[in-house]
Image 1 (cartoon, rainbow, N blue to C red):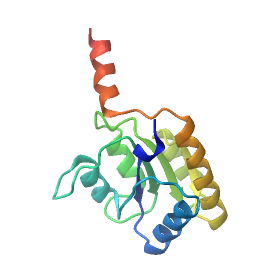
Image 2: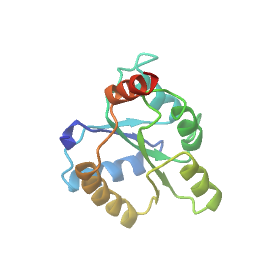
Image 3: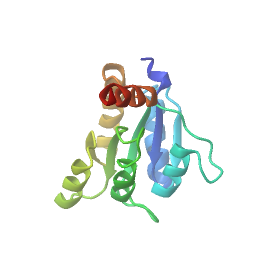
Image 4: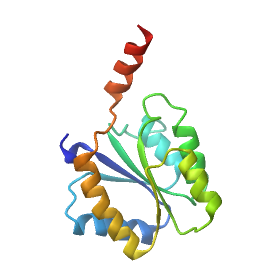
Length: 153
């Protein structure tokens, strides 16, 4: 799959953190379209195309801040994992928290990784994402439907 087809959705309420990550992505010359949501509610609106938001077509790679207003990262992923067609979306949790409870809660929701929001770790994340999206086969909405039909037969 061409890595340019993978949309990155950044869920981040802090403008400074969002800009730092977007700068790091540009610096690494990742050509993916990067979209931003300010919280989990806004992200669901984007992913589902509701409340006046244009639907973001997949495949998606989500970078989810754990602490956001209205709907935090854990609440967002809990809801996302219940939505057929989006439940297998690849997500990385971003956080300033070192709390073990947060780490375990994120992994219980099948995150691909739990990353601290430090400058050094964000640079490593960008390197990881570059390699990850070139190597990993992402689930698509079409494959969800097809797999579901195959198991129903």
